[in-house]
Image (cartoon, rainbow, N blue to C red):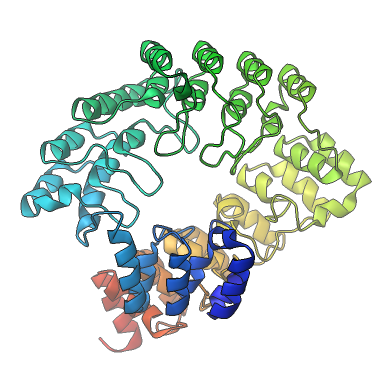
Length: 522
């Protein structure tokens, strides 16, 4: 499917989708087919995929570019028009919203007033994913800005593409849950203040939010009126049971279960429910037992969160409880090695590798990222030494190399000295030097260059060199470094992707002038 979309083979895509309609929404590394259709400029294919339900609000991994931005940057005007039409049917778009969102996110209330005075319509406008200034203000805990926006007419019920309303942004604690008992007091008070303000100004209160805030009286009242509300799903596909579980409110969990809450109903990124995974993650045996007694699936998983049983390994009672209720114990050598490395258990790892030395070079370890991925991320020196002695190597290609192998400069230096390829890249041929240039990591970029990274490598995603991505991201220090080291200021894979074009398009005037001097055109 991806290959056909890259090639613009509409006939093949039609054939594939007719056989399996779900392929329109398939993903690899958070990347769907529409990404390639837009990226490569295949207008008929873009139309077809949107007709089949492709999501126009998708953003790229990992730089978070929207489809509209992707089309506009490449000069695909007709595709950009199609995307704008699709987005306009869902959100009140505005080209000026970016500056307001930035000010709201950082809490710059003076800038907010200035922008709203100049254009009052911006208060209800959004970007391509439905983010309003109120969403950003609430996410940042900026109550004064939230109040200003509400005074100016912001919609407290605006729904983002992922279902989030401003109140969800305000109480969001991390990627899996919400502000909970035992959390940072400042965060909890700030979230409560934001939520209270929104509710006073018209945000809808429901049983999910009541569970988030531990409002037992409201939960009881709603359940007495309609017991089916025990399985209520809010707009962002979260349920009261998981909200109560995050608070480790066993009594509320029990109440919801008594009124028919199904612990296996799907939630966002949780196809078999979320509550039992939370109980395992929180090491809460009492809550886990209660959920299991009410039919919770002990083999449930959470996207990027693993299986329920994985989080119980350090608690013998909880682990055995899950196993007794049917949790699958995976005893294959690869699974045991994965767990032992994750636990930083040197003795267990060496024992397994003595029996199965081939696993040290198994390309499938850690989701294909390589056996050294977790020790590198967690700075586990002894584990890295042990694995390297058994022949482990960093793969030449991985999906998240910058997040694992180049998270820490000392680890990056160590791995390069041990033979890691300095031209390591992801599946879009974006090299580590591209990543470091985009993110402004000067020391890491220097390290890669010292070890032989290709300075003018052109990636497939942006058709750009590391210099091009540095210019695009406004990383002046990286631009200077790369030019000093001999980067070609004109190399690119497309006319729209030269370093100078990126700098001008992004309004990075100083960088544009520096590149012009390097090309002799200044």
